[in-house]
Image 1 (spheres, rainbow, N blue to C red):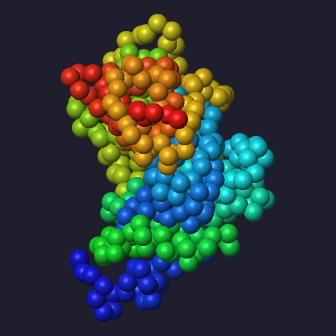
Image 2: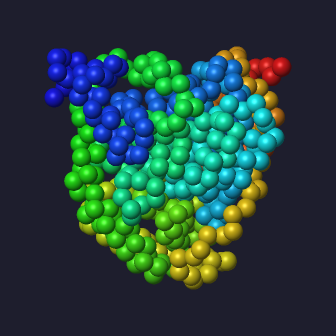
Image 3: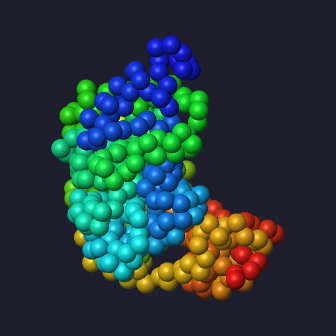
Amino acid sequence: MDITEIDGFDNLHQPEGILRDLQKKAARLCGAEESFYLVNGSTAGILSAVSAAVPYGGHILMARNCHKSAYHGAYLRNLKLSYLYPERLGEFDLFEAVTAGQVRNTLQKEPDIGAVLVVSPTYEGRIADTEEIARVVHARGLPLIVDEAHGAHLGLNDRVHKNSCQAGADLVIQSTHKTLPALTQTALLHVNGQLIDRELLKRFLHIYQTSSPSYPLMASIDNALCYVQENGEEAYEAFERQYKKLLTNLRRCRYLRFLPFDREKQDIGKLVISVKGTSLTGKQLYDLLLNKYHLQVEMAAESYVLAMFTLGDSTEGYARLEAALLEIDGEMAAVPGVTDKHEIEPASPGVSGKEIPVACLRLAQAWDREKEALALEESPGRLAGEFVNLYPPGIPLLVPGERITRELCSNLICLLQQGLPVQGIEMHGGRPLIKVLVRSD
């Protein structure tokens, strides 16, 4: 199976036969005008999209919860960054998707922006009104890029939300390997409209993707899409039914809390399990599920755990997770200030009380400057020299060139004490060190 570009099997970088036909098939199925197979993951798609949509040295507006690959694209193209800060669902300590109103307000304030990049669904499954965002962005004559890495299953059945191609976005990147039955590293890049120079986009795809694309990977993209075509109705019906049943049965939990089912705002592929106000931290619940119940969830945050489902998950998997959570909740002791309540509605969204790091230097300038390692507790006031993020999901808490605040420093120390995977912080002699710029002028 692991062939190369032999006769009859086409060339991904100049598709004229079978690969051209398969990419056309993907476009038809996903609602795009043109689609490209990606074998270097959504990372290659995001890098290519950012590079093609904004000229070198230009200005991009992007959600602050973008994956680090979007920042890498901005670095490589020396782009000026402006951010959209999603509102926070305080009850669950997670961020909403960005809104059309936020996009509109920022575009009015910064008229030189060349493109907009948003994430939908977010890592926790929050879905943006991409259709309205596209109208706002297109009214300015700008392209909209949507990082839909966690939404490759969207738009392929009426039981789930439409995807961003169907909502009018110009460039949409999807990781087929995340929520469809495809091998790791497979993804799709979809294009619509006339705002993107497609020849330029292809040039960047050639740059960011390997010149020796894996045929097993490409075949697995087609296999995943064939699976949806042939088994979609049955698979999506089971997907929705099992998710709803799980949420319904978890209403018996007294302390653990869960985001309610809402087709317009929440992807059924994600389950947020909040431990806020309980005797457990997110990391402790993560470890308990893994070590005692042998359940591998997606990630742990300070006050919640994220579980992830796909079309391929079994009824047994849902049942085991349900039983584990009910047992854990049943063994929890009452904690002062915690009420005995079932699944609750999210609190009204409000802007996070956390400080927003201020960018003092453009990313491309800051990341290339001389750096020094400094004890984390001594870093407030200095400018970050490296990205700092939890991984997963790889969303930066700190970007090179941003000023480190005392609040952020305290938050990072708390994350480390909880044992969460913080990238960009090195331990030396038991002390956390962070890289800062030697000079900030």
